[in-house]
Amino acid sequence: MIDSEYARTMARYNLWQNRSLYCEGDRLDDDQRRANRGAFFGSLHATLAHILWGDMMWMSRLDGWEKPAAGPADGEKWLDWEGLKATRAEADLRIAEWADRLEDADLLGDFSWYSGILKRDVSKPMWIVVAHVFNHQTHHRGQAHAILTSFGMTPDDTDLSFMPDHI
Image (cartoon, rainbow, N blue to C red; front, side):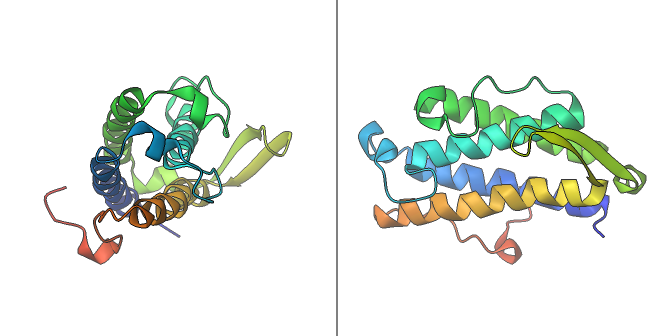
């Protein structure tokens, strides 16, 4: 089982990794960011948009955020690069604020929601849901990292143990 410190650490990790990916993404032109590079969502833009979509969907359930207007695979149509960057930066700060408010007791018990993917209600232990939010980010950020390195970019290492203390 995770504790609230895990959530705070992973929120910081999320912030650090996203800053790195978007900084390197800024060095590409829009055609490169939208080029299908064979990742699950195709392009860097669509992959990063999907991560943001997932975060916004989960945070709408966990913290009352507005649900994203787009669907999980609509990254290419959802936001332009500047809009994606700005929305991502705001979301990262809000996720960190949410994690800062979490207490260990908040992770106890079950959490229930309607899954649009499964088309049914789902209930899981709250700590698994929170761990999933951060795991989902990490999984798809690895794909974004691979896309960037295929363009010769050098985003920060992804090792959690290398996260700077000042994030």
